[in-house]
Length: 338
Image (cartoon, rainbow, N blue to C red; front, side):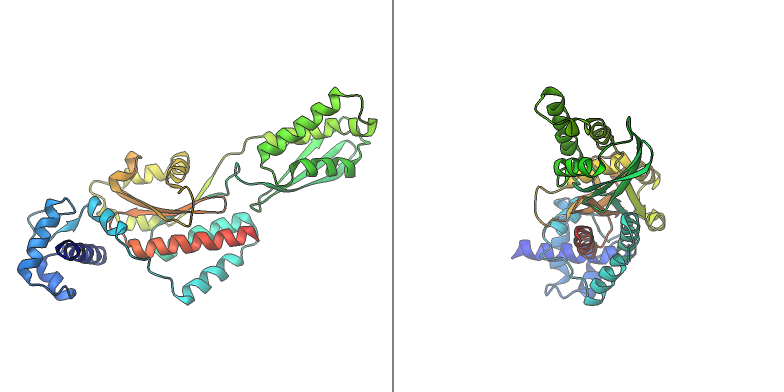
C-alpha cells in the first residue's frame, strides 16, 4: 500500500511539474489531487521518493521536481497511453491521405506530429535497405538511350537514363527478365539475382542468342540498383525546442547540434527500434548515449520502413506524446502500404 501511495505521489508530482514547470510542494499536492492522506504522510512519501533518487530539490525551495529516474518510473508504470479523440484520429488520417507523393507524406507527417506534441518531430525516410522493389519500368528515349524507372514498396520512385551498347535491345524481354528477378526483393537481393542471371548467361552455351543480347542491359540495371543511397531524416518544430530553453540546465546548443547530425539520429532510431510489436520506445535524459541529448527525452516508434518520433525536454507530457507518436506511425504505415 505504501509503495502504491508513493507512486501516486510521484505521478502527481510529474503531472504538476509538466503542467506548471514549477517545483511541487506537499501543500500543492493536497490542493490539486485526491490522495486521501494527510500532509504529514505526503511529506514522508516525498522524503522517501527523494531518498530513492526519484525526485529532487532544485534549490532551497520546499518544492520538488522529478529526476530522470523519476520520469522513467512514471513512464514504466503507465497503465495505458492517453487515447486520441475521434476528431484527432480523423484529422490525422485526412491530413496524411491528402499527400501526393512520398516526400509530401514525410513532410506532412513531421509537421503534424510536431503540432500534436509541441515538440521537435523527426522521421526517417523509408529505409532504403528494408524497402522492396515493386516494379522496374523501361522506357526507350532515343537510339541507344534507355530510361529506367524504379518503383519501391515505400512509394519512392527513382529514375536513371542509361546508354546502351546497341539500339536493337528487346525491351519487353529485358523488362520481363529484370522484374522476374527484382520484384518483391530488396535492392541488394535484386542486384544479386540479376548478377547471378548474367553470370549464368555468360557461362553456358545453352541459352539462346536472344537471351545473351539482354546481358549488357541487365548489367547496367544491376549497377543502378547497387548504387548506395543516403539515408535521410526529415524534421519539423525546432522552434518548440527553442521555446523550451529554460528546461535545459545549461543550454540547448548541444541539443541543436545533435539534431543537425542526421547520422546520429538515424543511429538513435536503430538503437531504439523494438524487436517486434507495436511498441513506443522512450529514452529519458542520461539514458541517451548521444552526449548532446543527455538533457532531452526521445519518444519513438517504428512504421513500415523506418523510425519516427519526437524530441524535447525531459519535462514532457509523456502519455499524450507516446499516444500521438504511436498513432501517427500507424497511419503512416497504412498509407505507405496502400
